[in-house]
Amino acid sequence: MPTAELTRKGTLLTNFQNITARIAAACAKAGRSPAEVELLAVTKYAADEDVKLLIEAGALRTAGENKVQDARAKWLEGALAPLRSRVQLHFIGHLQTNKAKAAVETFDWIDCVDSLRIAAEINRHAAALGKTMPVMIQLKLNASPTQSGVSPEEAGALLAGLREFKNLDPRGYMGIAPAAAGPEELKAAFNKAKVLFDRDFPGTGNRLSLGMSGDYELAVEAGSSLPRIGGSLFA
Image (cartoon, rainbow, N blue to C red; front, side, top):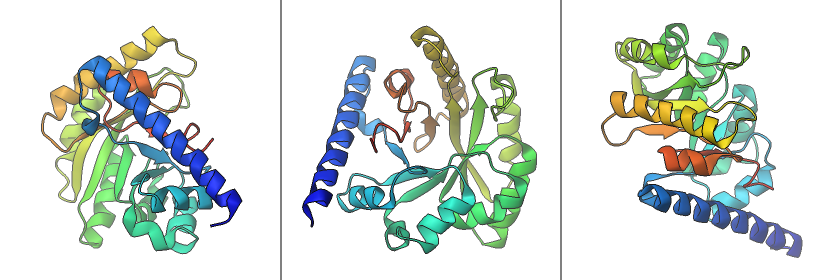
């Protein structure tokens, strides 16, 4: 391996170790086991070579992409295709109905369901492929008019609807915190999501996906089991 590649690999693994150490510290503060938390690497802006280095080192096992076509180009046709089977791939962007078929074909999980309309499309294409699709409901935890998601008050009704689809497997909630929020506002938003998660997904194997590079420690303290981290990992 060339010197530059070795140096970059060392930087990436140091980033990964620092993040996992901070997750472990947040777990300890909340009386949780670090084994309850899995890092989802957001790879949309990452260089393919960086992603490849982390996969081959065994550090990256779960990844998230925001755009269906970019993910297909990268993971099914491009440089990461040979490593696709080693990664659980989540769709974490806003899914349009005309991209539902490609999303079902490409991803292992779809984490951003926010309506029965998109759920029906995912279910239809999953049925055609003989596939049961793990999905998560996206909660809207802020007042931004451009932010996708369903309000916490409407989440239970949407979940009941999802459970009527034979080829969907509802597995938890995903939420994005308010932009530029302070620690107390973040805690309140994360805690609200955790209350809903405990109410609606009491079993094992379900996921609460909260927290990104700037707030994942608070999210883990609140109960997140799948923080989504890109910038800090690939810096």
